[in-house]
Amino acid sequence: MNAIAPALIQKLQQLPQQRLAEVEDFVEFLAARESRSIAGAALGESFAKLDKLNQPVLSDAEIDAEIQTARKERIAQRG
Image (cartoon, rainbow, N blue to C red):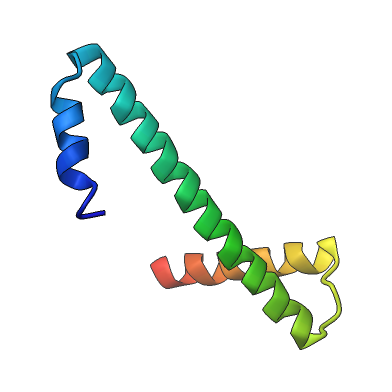
């Protein structure tokens, strides 16, 4: 990246303001895509770890019960 930076900066300085805005939008798009890629890989690793635990899948009712319990605990901590 260090070798590219001076040449890239020089090219950017030659662009009109409207094109710089487009470049900025594109760089933000690339950064967001990279973030999603990293998050997706982390999620995939998490799923793999869960699969290795070999635990039964929770039913919707069990998930709802866990949520309700957590909410009640949070409310109790506040009050």
